[in-house]
Amino acid sequence: MSTTAFDTTISQARDLLRWRSPLRTELWAARLTTEARADETLLQQLARDGGAEARLALAALAAVNPEEPATAPEDDDVLGPHLRAGREAIGSLPGWVARMGQVTCEGAWYGKADRYGEQTLAALSFRYGNGKEPHLLVVGIDQVHGGLAVDAVVEELKFLDDLDLAPTDAGVAAGRILDAFELTDLVMGAEVAPTLPAVRALALSRAHAVPHPVRHAGDDLVAHFHDLPDEPAAREAFEALVDFLGDRPLWWSPARASQFLTAWLPREALLSDEAIAAMPEVVRRWTRHHGEHPEILRRIDADAPGLPLLMADDSLASVNKRISRHRA
Image 1 (cartoon, rainbow, N blue to C red):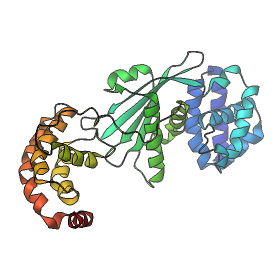
Image 2 (cartoon, one colour; image 1 turned 180 degrees about the vertical axis):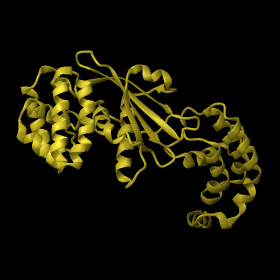
Image 3 (cartoon, one colour; image 1 turned 90 degrees about the vertical axis):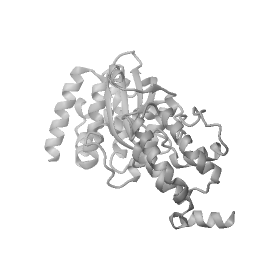
Image 4 (cartoon, rainbow, N blue to C red; image 1 turned 60 degrees about the horizontal axis):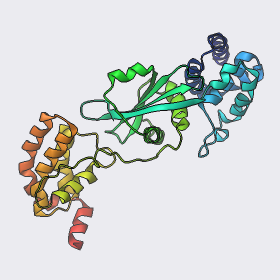
């Protein structure tokens, strides 16, 4: 198997030396990263070979697995020993090879991938130092299961035309991508698109290429909400909603609105009678802040009348809520 993988790698590298495309080579190296981690003998064969094709493979691997202060690649048991050789090989290869990884971020976007924000998209656009091969990285971030990176693609910039994303700060978008991949790595057996592993290394490389990525940034959707009803304790009610939304406020669906009103509030929230009375209208206005969602409003209208009785049922309260109630 290793011999076949090695021969295939050399053949592909030979074609890439003719194409002279940094982007195409980096995309190939991202796929090769996955293969190399699964078959360490491939790296050993490349290191022993020493030909231009083998040196290109190692240089490309180094380009999409750059040094980062927090996770130096030399600490990687599989790739680490070979990445230094890859960086050293760049000087012995054609000049275009040195452009791999040398990109400038020119724009960033973020928003919902679907109607209810069950998945969001973070996008970054890049261009090489010579101005050529502009490209777009788009990472799908699952909201329902905690903010994991579940898919990624590298496309032409016109791909943005099919997405409903808003411009955002590049550092924030890059930070969201890094946060999402970190969470995915922490979840054993995380369900991701079958295409993600082949893009992962390049996606991380591009996110790290953005200066000063902002990790664990809050979403400004909450900060831009200024439509609280003029009712007593509306602010108290909204603060409970914000606590429920956490760091995923773009995710808002009929099911999530119902979960908030019928399960989470009775289990977790200590609210005054005035805040309970204000809650339905607060949630309706939050829904309108998300856009036109009549189906969510209908669910709220169906669930809201039962809220006072649910809030009064102490058997639904969590242990923490019961303790807090007795301390109050």
